[in-house]
Amino acid sequence: MIEISGVSHDFDGRPVLRDISLNLVERRIAIIGANGSGKTTLARMLNGLVVPRRGEVLVDGVSARKNGSEVRRLVGYVFQNPEHQIVMPTVEEDLAFGLHNMNLPKAEITARVDAMLAAHGLAARRDSAAHLLSGGEQKLLTLLSVLIMEPRYIVFDEPMNSLDLATRRRFSGLMDGLAQTIITITHDFDLIAGYDRAILIHAGRVEADGAPGDVVRRYIALVDAGG
Amino acid sequence: MLALYIHRGSPIHRLGAGSKILVSIAGSFAIVLVKPLWLLAGILLAVASLYPVARLPLRAIARALKPVLLVTAALSALQLALAGPAEAASTALRILSLVLLTSLVTLTTRLSDMLDVLTRAARPLAALGLSPPKLALAVGLAIRFIPTLLQDLQEIQQARLARRARGPSLFGIGPLMVKILRMTDALGDAIAARGFDNRK
Image (cartoon, rainbow over the protein chains, first blue to last red):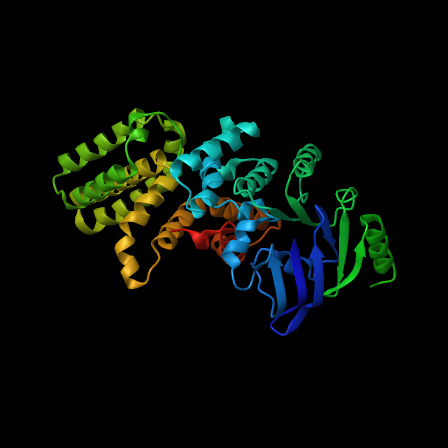
């Protein structure tokens, strides 16, 4: 479970989150809201990339403030722009990057990379240059590079951004099949239709929290009202 | 110059990263120190002859060499005017040999293997408070992002052309620097998110 207790945060004095408290226990959770509402900052707190000024984030009882590196092992993060998430030049090396960071033995790294490439039909792409992959392939690589580290939770930041229809379907199918708890920041209401819970962040506060359909209706009403 | 790893099953690919780096360092010293032109020409021929052995795509590499050839020609022309034909020839031979030798290493060695060697080599620096994995990663990222940044620069130049921009193409460097700074932030987060701070 991820527990967020009394979290507030600001950037250079400009408040972005105000007294947020949430317990995330469902398997599929969406965070929605307007640009600049604070949802990405909240999501980044879940794996310790941002430490809140006030309040606490606990992941399975581990404090993101006190033990950020352990929290990052528990929570994977798939960023919006794959170009900025791929660290190594080839597919194989990028998959292995996180495993090297976990200080696993070389034999285990090789075995996990081989298994991941085979499971997703990428064995022939093992030595391909990552920067030459298509946008969809790069997105897939970013997900696999997180999955290979076997986190318990995965945060997706706008996962369907700029993907074509076929890639969206493939990526969405992959996300549906994940055993991990998924927390998705998105503007894509179709994607979250089957989710267990949606949270609407507005002006740094939780404006609505519940079934995705109800929360999306509240969001639309808010936008219609000029909020 | 094209400098990222190209996978082939050649004998040069199979050599250890450490040996290749050591040979390239020793070779580079030799290239700088050797004086006779015939010997410099011999070294260039020897290095060039390793490319077919490494089964690298020669046409693509020849295309990637064009900017290097232009720079070499300019420098040699300057040397010709200042110091005569022998100096001009040795400058050209040295530059081409160095570029081909170091590129041969990066083209035939996985970056992760080079980083392992760099991390080991930088271990003594840990006594000075420096982190060998961080130093190695910095070098690795510089190599990894060369093609991405070149692509970005090309896009910026095309955007300038599309908007009929005037002025030298050097003006594209400004937007590129902004892009690099933004990318650096995002990349730092991505590296942290994948647990780099746990690396030993």
